Length: 422
Image (tube, rainbow, N blue to C red):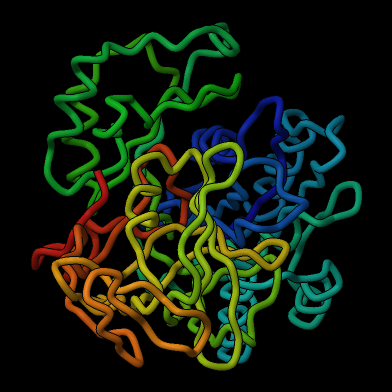
């Protein structure tokens, strides 16, 4: 049986991963987790999300088929007991996949990927649940059924790219109090190979622990279970209630779609190729705006203030630079997650030199004149210029990274010497 659940938390507390962790313990009497529980990040732009838009799936190898009924009751009772039903945007959903067909797998594979990249309606999940007779329960408006079915679908069909996260949970009596974690041990853990986003070197901050009053103490992300467990063994902290290693689509760029600028829609995420069409400008609040075009359309891309040093990279770009941008679109603006500078514009039009000084313009389309000797020229000259930036990849710091965004440490290009904003 695959159990999918979603939308049990709120902005004020609780966490769907914690409810999954509790269920894993409760269901041990009925079987064991097959492989890993899945933590699936869905479309990060959905306006209905509570926090990180995570859905969970637990594949259980049942000891006996007659245990299906008791398992469903335990899951539903636990959600009813622990979910934050008082929050407006909390609309839990749970699904139970007990058998499958090839047609069902294909439909769920498409649905699950769309849940990460697109905007879905509740009726789409309900239609699939009905078509294949999948046992389920929705609470309130039932929107959580979308994520629950998507997570269960990935558990059934597999993730095209994956990482791991070990999440450690706090004792309940400590929820809402300051987290006690020895900082030195975190920096030692962050130095372990095949892990990332434990600390932010630019700001010299620890970033693997949340600040909200939810049950999570910290999460360690990495390439394998071995990698995250190795880092975990070095952390010194307050006592844990429990911890779970999840397989996940975090840091995979699964949310991104290649497209032309003219095809872009709000609330989706894209990889776009284009040329810088206007000089970058800094807005009030420290946000930096870049405009790119592809010959037929143009759009603005934003490096917001929390991206810190990444903004200095954007400011160094010039009109004519060729770039590939990665990010999510809202209100017609792409929120930059990373950028690949593919070609530099290393030429600039300047007034001609004469008598060791630049000629002055005589007016629009009237040419140029040397103020000293009176010599004239019809047009500007093209000169090579030095740039204080190189081609390659640049990314936002870990403190500003979205759950799904792939860090450069996971890119082969980065390993071969691409640049990184630090």
